[in-house]
Amino acid sequence: MTETLMDRVLAATGGGRPAPEQSTVLAVEPPVGEATPAQVDAVQEYLDKHADKFAASLPKHVPYEAFRAAVAALLPRLGACTPASLRMALLTCARFGLVPDGYEAAIQVQGSKAVFVPRYQGYVRLMYRSGMVASVHCGLVHENDEWEVSPSAPAPDDFRLTIRPDLSPEERGKALFAYAFVRLTDGTRSQVVYVNRHKAAQLRDEWSYAYKLAEANGRKDSFWHRDFDHMMLKSGLKALFPWVPTSADLVALVEADDAGERGEVQIVHAPRPEMAARAAEAEQAHREAEGPQREPARLPVKRNKTGGRYRGKKQRGGRKTGCS
Image (cartoon, rainbow, N blue to C red; front, top):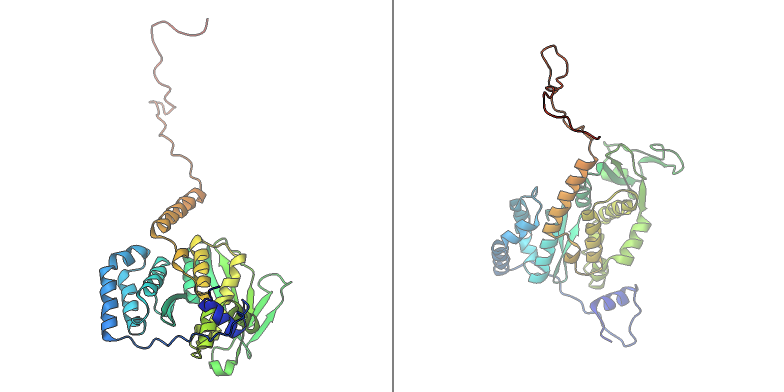
């Protein structure tokens, strides 16, 4: 039976599938460093050649110039990735309407592959874009914050948090857990969800291919290594989705994000431009149908000289018709 890289990584890190009977050595992928000027020029030429494809994939509210500028800043690091993986990562990012600037989304290097990684701000962006959420609230609770969780109490007494903005991050102490909730457009508040460090580590160890690969290669350069607190916060937002209405794009974003964590192809989960346009048209039609029902306009009432309702002229002469 052919042994895949995923099999070797999981076997070396003690997770998932059982190790094969024969003794194997984990294939360590060399880190991808700065691209050569020739590689950068080649990627820039490719982006310019297919600019219409990327522009067509982006939603109308995301200018291609902003997307192109963010990609250009990444080229020295991404130019050495395989062309196919870079194309897929950038197309996936564009179809979700996120800019790979490290804020809404990022393009992570895994070995020689480029992988699309939505940041928690990207999730927040799509939640607002769905039109079903009035406000998103998420954050981290630190050791020296004052907080209280009472799940049986009615909102908003079920979760209380008091922080001191004058304290430095060091003075606030270690982040204990992430929380997330939303207020919907109808004024109601969702359930508050929590993900602590232990739960976040469980999710990382079970699902993150990037983390396992970085551990196996001794590089420790995955997002879980570099910014655990951010990943814990993003895990909190994703845990919120079963409790709030989600759009098709949000569901697809979770699937693409999870596929990237597993080392699988992501582009198959991204919305296609024509489907996004149809979804926008359907959502607009739904809003119009659910909006306030207006009475049909009435024709003006014709009046006679005395101000009464005009009844029309009486029929003169001729034979009257009717039932006999």
